[in-house]
Image (cartoon, rainbow, N blue to C red; front, side, top):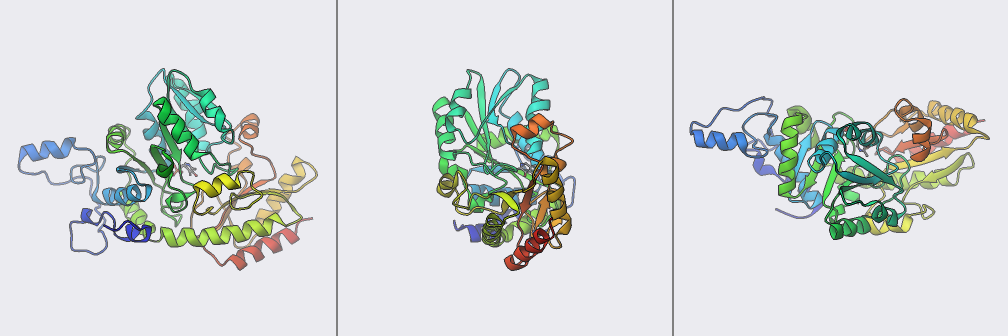
Length: 396
Ligand SMILES: *Cc1c(COP(=O)(O)O)cnc(C)c1O
């Protein structure tokens, strides 16, 4: 099979479709007819990801999706889940047990941060969070019982960058597993295996699916590791439903086209916002004024569609009001959580996560009251710039 991204997206894993249909059918079934040979049936029941035993164990479309993403992420194997958080939690629980320690970042996707803080703590697993922009901090945080370095780059929502090569090397030298949440970049813009990272996780709800019509997650890694994750997955039970798997497979076919368009649109938008007097600051790794632009350019092929902006205001209260007015004045951008779809979205992170994060937590992860997170879609860039322009004009 070809090794170019465009072709992988359209054709990889086709052998999991055992029918004559060009497009994989939806295997909408919970169970499969047993082989009349008991030895074969025992094999189906015990083999990791067997596609024809029982849905929680595997499904042909799930295998096909996993094959596509594993190939893109340059790993031996992959496993799909019902959500990104299901993938992340199973991936982590396949590595750590009570008494173990994880080195992670101050800024993480809020669900991951809550999993570390509120869930793992109850099971005797400790986490040290470090500033991801300080590469030496990862080494300083390692303890004798550290089993995992967990990173996210670019991070949600601030778009800070973690040095993949430095973390990959550190983990290898210390015999620790390294894992990255690659959701914001997508494998089109960033392939962490190239920098020595062991495991790649995604919320496939975002760019991989790409149409805001499903939730899914995926873990990519070595065959041995994915087998361990599969065992956790069978016990935890968050398997990806057949219809969602099929939608994800269809979404993946256009991943390259979508992300390329999104990269172009986002740069244009970031440049527009960066020179706008009513915008205090813009964080976009593709802008040369991003404090880690050079690092981003070294490890990313494109800068993706996530932009973080701070709306101006003389104090927190006014900045919040202005941010909310900007959202309300927009006609094309939709005010909604999530990201990575064909449509442009905008959200106020402090409100979205207000109920989960304390004021101190928000400060630690750098979330302010005037902050807005934009997920740029595939619309015409001029229409997006014009929409922001008219909405900003209406601010006092
Ligand atoms: C959305 C998201 C997740 C969680 O994914 P779900 O599919 O919502 O469970 C994890 N990491 C990042 C960076 C995300 O944006």
